[in-house]
Amino acid sequence: MPGWLMWLLVVLLAWALLAILLSLLVARFLSLSASSLAGADAEATARAAVLTRSEPIPAQPAFTRHTEPLRSRRILIVDDDPALRELLRTTLTAEFEVAEAADAERASDLARLWRPTLVLLDVEMPGLDGLSFCSDLKLKHVYAAPLVVLLTGAEIGEEEATRVGADALLRKPFSPLELVGVIDRLTGADGIETGTEVTDKPSDQVLLYARDLSRLVEIERMQRRVVQDAYRETVMALANALEANDSRTGTHSLRVRHYAANLTAAVEPALLGDPSLEYGFLLHDVGKIGVPNELLEKRGPLSPREMELMRLHPVIGAKILADVTFLQTEGLKVIRSHHEHWDGTGYPDGLAGEEIPLSARIFAVADALDAMTGERPYRRPASWEGAAEEISTQGGRQFDPDIVQMFLTEKDGLRRLFELTAAA
Image (tube, rainbow, N blue to C red):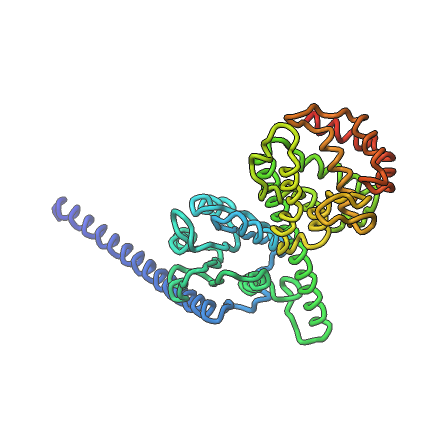
């Protein structure tokens, strides 16, 4: 056999073996692709059921879907509203590790590096919107994609949510309980403990109800704390705006709040349990919004007519805040009555003695202390000793004599506070 013919047969045999190998690889690839498509189709069907029924349809019983402890599961909050992110975080941190992002770009980095179990995703975001990001997230993490709950106030259909791969759709506004319920169902946390099947036994049901009640109490407590912090921040901002509008007073509201809180703790500590009291201390002069600026900025004493206008500010302040729920108790009393005098010569209502609310009587002393020792454009501040002496002489006239006595007892501590605020 010629040599060239032998080489030709070798080459043909090699090509035949290569063709056989390629055909086997293609067949294997097609088999894998068919399996993947079947799995994706089953997953899409399950998602559609989740969105239609507002609950997940697990491939296996919910109590065995996740075996890791609840606290180890991670939730990523993606929303451009910082207030909503804070509310969601405080609701979830008791049982989950929580991270947050304000936009899709930051969320994409966190999802890649932190690998969350579930993503709470706002639909209406600047830049890349939630629907597009959800689709990208599911495609990029096809083998270990996180669960995604879309949060929206828009009219988005469940079909559209299913199309981008979302596992649930929660419409705003929603309650913390709705959110927790959706997360529990998606992550398989409906049992008394992860990995434990819930039965109909009365003992199991009691434990389940106890767990849910405990969670409700904790969520309510955290939500109340967040709301109170928001109130405080709002009141602080308003107090700062008032100070900026009245160049005569500087940081009067902030200083007098410290004096009044310390004096209240000495006279009647129970009053400090009312959160509105601090707000009243800060907003005691809010009624000056209704006083002409030329009066607030005037250098020198006010005329009788101007003083009459200035004396309207407690009434104006009380009217402005009359419908504010979190000020309805002691806070509003301070705002209206902090210029009343023990002997009945004060304003705006001419109250006397114990007709004046106790919180307002305490605050009146603190207010006078800061007014005398603070800077004013038309006079030099009084010394600490001079102010304390003046308050002492006004016991039984301008001020409640018992509160004046307590002021004298606590004046060393108040003086240290005065020195600290003066240095700041």
